[in-house]
Length: 422
Image (cartoon, rainbow, N blue to C red; front, side, top):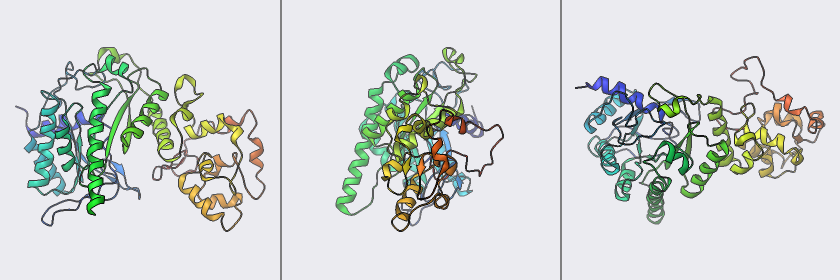
C-alpha cells in the first residue's frame, strides 16, 4: 500500500510532461459561502501580465495506462512505479494546499484506466466534488480524454475552466508508429465536442444576457516536438488547422527528451533542443497575433525546420527583403506587423502617433520599438543610414548570436517575456 505522500511524489512528477496547463481568460463567480476565485491571466507556473508567476497543483489521477504511446514514460510497457489517487484524495489535497496558499487551482490529467469513459468519469467526480461540495471557486483544468462520450465531455465543461485533449503528434502516420491506440479522428472528435459545448454556452449567454458557464477558459492541446521525424512546418501546419477548426485557446509545444523509461525505439533519438520548442512558440505567436500563415513562416527554411539562431519573424524578413524597407509613416498595420522588432503594441502606438506627427528614428525608441532589428527594415521622416544595408549580402551576419551572455533586460532579446512581442 502506497501512502498519500508517496502517491503525491509519483503522480506530481508524472504530470510534468504535460505542458498544456497554463490558463487565461477564465472568470468564475465564487459562491458566497465558497472558497477560491479565478481571475486574470495564468495559473500553473504561468506569467500574469504584470510578470507574477502563479501556481497550480498539477497531478495525474493515476499513471496506470492501458495505452502504449512510445513517447510517454507512463505507457503500458514502461517500468515506472505505478500509483493511483482516489478522487476524494485529490479533493482533499487541493483544498488543503489552497487553504495554505500554496496553489491557486488544479490541473488534473490521468492515464487511461479501463477505458476513456471510465477515466473521464473519475476526473469529473473530482471537479464536481470540488465545485458542489467544497464550493471551490478556483481554477480547474481537466484533461478531455480522447474517445470519451460527448455527454461526459459536456458535463466536464460545467465544472472545468479549461479542457484539453492532447493530440501529441501532428499526423496519423506518426500516431500509427508511436501511439497505435490513438487516432487523429478520435482526438479531433473530442475537440469538436468541447467546441460545441463552448459555442452553445456562448449562444445561451448572449440570448439570456448571462455569463458563459462551460469551459470559460476554452480548450487547448499539446504537440510533442522531436519524438517523430515531423518537421516544424508539419507541426505548425497542424497547429494552424486546429486553431482554425476548433478555435483553440492555445497549442502547447513540448520538446521530447529521452528518459530512463523511454521506449527503446525512441531512446536513440537525440534530445530535442529547447530552442526548437522556443522557436515554435514564437512562430505560433506570429500565427495567432501577427497575421502570418504557417506556410509563410516555414517556406524556404532548411528541411522544414525553423532557424535556431534567428527568431522566425526576423528569418522571414531576411528571406523577403524585397518587401522592405517599410515607411512607418505610411505603411498599413498589417505590413508594420511584419517588421522585425515592431510588436503589436508598438504598431498600435505608431499608428496612433503618426496621426499627429511625422515619426522619426528617435521616436521609435520612445514607442518601444526594438531598434536593433527594426532600423534595417524601415524608413522614417529623418535620415536612417542603416536602411542602406538592407540589400547587402552580409546583413544576416549583423544578427548573428553574440558570444557574450546578454543582459536579461537588453533589447537584443527577440521576444518580450511579458508581452510576447517579436
